[in-house]
Amino acid sequence: MESNGHAVSCREVKKHYGEGETRIDALRGVDFDARFGELSFLVGPSGCGKTTLLCVIAGLLDRTGGDLTVLGERPDDLSDAERVLFRRKNLGFVFQQYNLLPALTAAENVSVPLLAAEVPRKEALDRAKALLSRLGLEKRIQALPSKLSGGQQQRVALARALVHEPRIIVCDEPTAALDHATGETVMELLASNAVQPDRAVIVVTHDSRVFHHADSIARMDDGRIVEVTRAIGSFPPEITQVAAPFQKEAAL
Amino acid sequence: MNFVALRMLTGDRAKYFGLVFAIAFCTFLLENQTSIFANILRRTASQILDVTDAEVWVMDPQTEYWDQTKALKDTDLTRVRGVAGVGWAVRLFKGNPVARTSSGKFGASLIIGLDDATLAGAPRKMLLGSWDRLREPDSVVIDKAGYILLFPKQPLQLDRTLQMNDHLVRIVGISDASAPFLSLPIMHTRYSEAINFVGHERTELSFIIARPAPGVTPKELTARIEKQTGLRARTTKEFLWDCVGYYLRNTGIPVNFGITIIVGLVVGTVVAGQTFYLFTVDNLKQFGALKAIGVTNLRLTGMILLQAFSVGALGFALGTGMAASFFELTLHKLATRGIVLMWQCVGITGACIFFVVIVASILSIRRVLVLEPATVFQG
Image 1 (cartoon, chains in turn red, brown):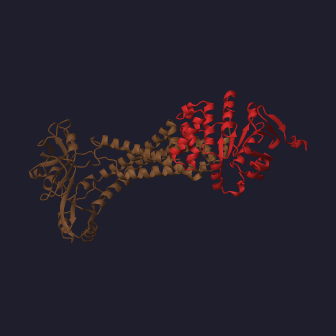
Image 2 (cartoon, rainbow over the protein chains, first blue to last red):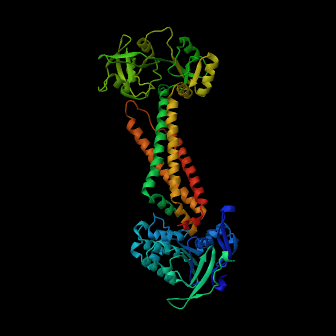
Image 3 (tube, each protein chain N blue to C red):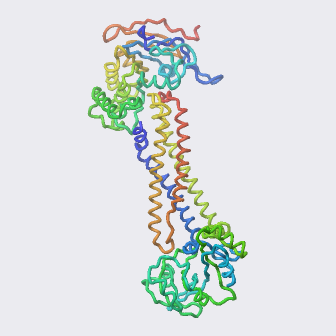
């Protein structure tokens, strides 16, 4: 619930793909909270369920068990159309491969969430340009994605996630396709522009070089959260383990 | 979001032009082949349509089309004139004499003998000379194409002579008669002259052409003539379709053109439809991103329809332009004169393209609607 400072609250969330012999349990009962004003990292090895959890939180996938609350709403209570509108209004996305529309300029790409919300085109473009300038891309506003570097494309993607001022931003491996220095720049921009008291930012990553930006790190393995650590104090953060050590299913 | 849809469409120039060209080519092929087919079939009845004075044709009961005639008796004209509702009725002769020029060039021709008194049935457009000069003895009006066939590379000139059945015939006019099915010179003369140019037979009356009296429709008149005389009577339109039907049933033209049209339709449909469908499939990641961002299925459907119809409209317009240009270029050639882009063919082709666009859109929309936006997170 929003009142306790949690933008997202997962309790025993489960998700499986397929049935019978082909069934894959991607989430095996996840407890996870993302707080307002924080950068929450979901980390873990490939295939551990990070992206699936992110998709469930974003309403892109239906969970198959457990309880989920996003901004005080239970996605189950919403119709498909309401979920799309909820997502459009409250969520911003940053993808690993940027997923910018190649035919649109940087400013036009950033304006897409506003256009989807029926904001007039001129106003949408003005807001997009202003945000791109804030992110240091004022000279690349009219550039097509193909003319931008990876770091610039990710900054455009970040602007697209921010432009409609959503209350939750989900980022899937935002630095995976970038070199360390560029990734660091993107994370700094994310931390300085996205993190606000009334907004939660959830970042899925396995890039340990950017962990120091996190306010909390939930480590996943085999479809479960196995460890949650919270950063306390200023950089470099002091990492405090707050969750019980992971007990592997095989050891039970 | 409309501009986003259009920019997605035009962003990849190669794919975009491929799509437009596929539809334009399909349009061109369909309009071109259907128009040529329709115009060639129309040529089987050119001389019927050239007779604008009459609305009813009377012929032997066994006559099926223009080129198949069995002469009527002269008394049949009197019988037809005696039918109530006939405004007027006159004779029309059709024969195929061999015309020979003074230089020795010769060729089979089509001669049409008009009623001596009224000259009813003559084509309206004269390029040189006048119909009145047909009243001179041994005179003919020849069509321009026929003139060029008999007098190649020579200027259009009156008073040249032709020999037909030992008669020296003078050209007193050059008309713009419609091209016949076969490329024969078309000559018009008076009925009494025509039968001399061909050679006398016992009976020579090919057709009786008539016009109903005021208040009587051509259809009513044909029914009355058939009932009263036992002859076959057709309206101009019915006779036109008799000719077209005969050639459709008894020649390889429809099969030949039909195959081309079907191949054009299938190839064009498959190429255009598949290209557009693949365009959508190639852009699934982008559509997935839009879905994740919160663009509704209704809006995505609208975007795909806009893309499909804009590319369809542009391709159709280009293809129609290409077809129109083709016919404009060939319109003035001797062999293809009078063959035009028919609006009916444009309409039919438009319907086909619309169908292609709809099918491709439905397949594309279905693909996008079932797309899980979560796929956008998959690497």
